[in-house]
Length: 362
Image (cartoon, rainbow, N blue to C red):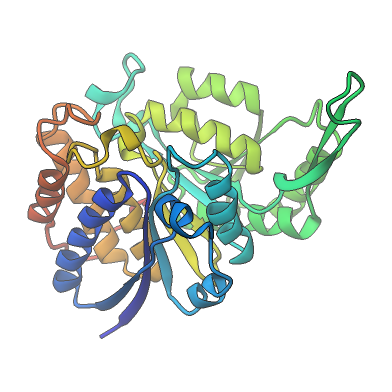
């Protein structure tokens, strides 16, 4: 029987509430699928920073490298200046643990919750593979003559052949394994960002030669947002850079029904990955037991998929779909018809055994 070591970082705001529901589901599915796990909880977040003025202890990254995976609730505190926690925890962990893939499924469970007229679940079912360690988020740049009328601020998009190629190669492999249409779309802006996107485009088509079974496609990022709204059914798997991926996945979350279902993974295929709901800490809902925990629960499914527990991952996703379709009145906080803990209970109750692993896209 496999035994996994999972680091848990509940984080800030409603992070603890949604993580508690995820752990409730993890306990139930582990019994059904016959695997063991142990968790260690870390208090990294705003409260710790306000108390100690320390964002992450020096030992944190090395300690987290000893785990099989990381389960994160949310980072963001109303009493901490924006950027301190995000850079000091989220970006530091992503960079130092070399989590170079950000994986974001966009899947509509129920057309009642889709803001797009006439679109159904079969129309909105794709995945965005976002490069997660380079680009504009690398933090490279400078000020000149700061505070003067002649001030210049330079922000550098840093892209390496190694970083671009490993992201693109991951996307082709993902499309080969999980893509329903076997189509991979490169999303960029090659007509304007001629240096970075020349590298991306050349690398994309060079790697594509190794995957003749995968249909290749390109779309400018602005056109991609248009097609998300008009014809989202075109997309299967999308690969893009750090900033564009950050932007289009928020739009993707909206067309799938909102942040309540938006799950994500920061993945190092050869190391330690980290999984989290996308919606943030939502401090105005903290302690009210009304936040939607499904994004955190679906992130747990992604975590188990990455660990190789595909049966457990599929069971969780199927249960979440059942709960959305048959129980919830809304996906918004306070409007679901159930409390946070009750939604977690519903997912546990609807965990149905399956006889074989399905090729579900988690």
